[in-house]
Length: 437
Image (cartoon, rainbow, N blue to C red; front, side):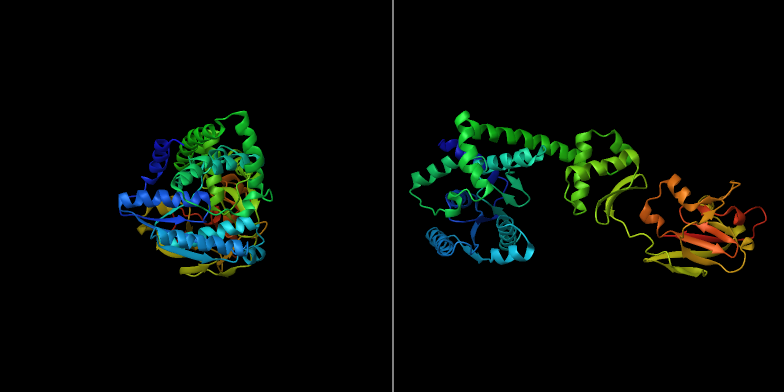
């Protein structure tokens, strides 16, 4: 073990914690976490950083779990380090949620870490071997660049001071100091996928190349830098369709992955490809349940769309003033002297109706199948559906678009405009101005 390199690697990560900060060490009692605790004790005392520890008893290994808990209590007592012990019923949680034991334990463990850390840093004992195992596991699953980056040294408030240290150096560190540790018997079996990689694949690869672990560490450093660059490029995108079409494919797909994750969708290759097709084909793609990828105002959107015809039965007399419209909108109708209309923008929006040309009662309703309108300067009627298609109005907006009709037909359709039949002209005295939100 190169003690100078050991110190340099751990301190490079720990230096991200400010003086007078707080670190909570995740302590299992195994070699890695015991080494972590000793490294942190020495570093924190020099930097005036408050150190505490937490031990999670998963209650999965009977007496062995209790033995590990007692070891951690005695170790922290020896070094005068405050310890929090949490006992969690992993088996019951996994049965309730339908999770594997590994996944359920991880979720509960990090939840407990967050609660105990109270906004401070959480230090875990992942090391270079763990990172190499993650890379191999991701390769077996089929991965992209991010999966080859291994375990990051820092993620949010989680720090991993030993991530660039091989397990052999950790064990040597403890041997030199005469420090004991406990061994989880489940780590000695091949019952778990990671154990198969740890006991079978890593020794073979190390036998092929003695510098395998160091090479993995160097590779993940380089790839993390490249991955960070792509992430920053993707974070700068706004969803503008024109920009996305000209953006490099790798960056564009990173942006899509961000959208999918924000919508709570697992970004598998099929969903990424379907979402990307919306950018070039302006189609609507279902991703999961009622979550779709679609274009809205020439921007790529991933989100939920209301089911069709949710508001198709709404109909009510139009009144001057505020009109309630589903789901929670206001349609404003104002009668204005046309000669006193100073807001030229109101005219160019085509939302002004000549009051004298309205026939009979006026109704506000949602769109129905077969609705059509003759727009100003057009000598024929067109289906609203075709106008929406031409204007690329997304489906979820069409389904709850406001329509106003008199006894002779539609005089206003949201996203389309007014009917030629009621358009203001030189003889217009009063107009009905329609505003939607």
